[in-house]
Image (cartoon, rainbow, N blue to C red; front, top):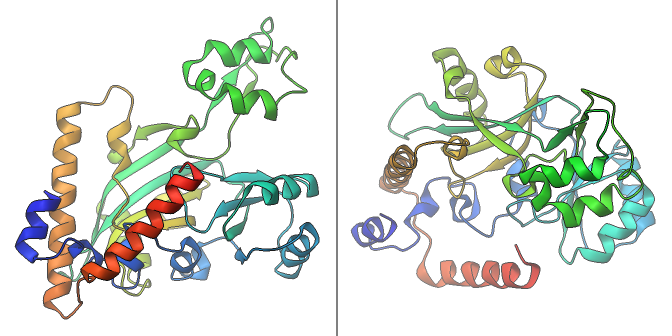
Length: 317
């Protein structure tokens, strides 16, 4: 589909017109910090950019100056699929992060709200209003005690947790031989990424006219944004529906309607959703282009792609 639309538009990077205010429309190479800066302050957590090189003390001073207190979330300014996204609880955690990170990164207020969702939004430039077409609830990786098994046993008996063993055995080294009480739920990873063990739950039943209207109102405050996914936290489904949320990240045209990854979901339906997704992306891009938004040139697109590819190869994204 990408090749077909690229041929029609005579541009390999036609999708760059989907979100004119975001580099490449959000397909690759964009700064997470710059994109989040487009979001209204009322619906996003405090976020600052930390530039390298830096020291632990400089980082701690920057947090204090900007009203951020530990714990906070650190994430690369350019990254994907949960790479180097960490919850930082101490100065020692800062040291460890600085020893590993090689690019500028974001420090973000830890949003202590219980529910996390991915909400996909589409607005065709020719239409006055947009709509939500995908809602994905994120169920964090956890285990539940039975009063007899150790934490290590519980982790190794759960497929999703077992895959994360190399990371979890370090994070929970001091607790692996503890026996959690019956019914006690232990959240192992508090970052909602599929690659970190999070389960994606299809929550499209929550889509209503009111829901779409709430996100339409937020999206229209984001200049040059038409197509993408909000990754957010909230206190309840009611708050989600009314837009009482905290947007941790805004992803452009490179994002997916993640509800298709619901366990046991139909492959055929998933393919159908992706086909519709790419049709919508083309229509948004074409309509913006007709209104004067240029497509990214081949030379510039190639330069950005090569830089992004180099980063991925070097950092195991």
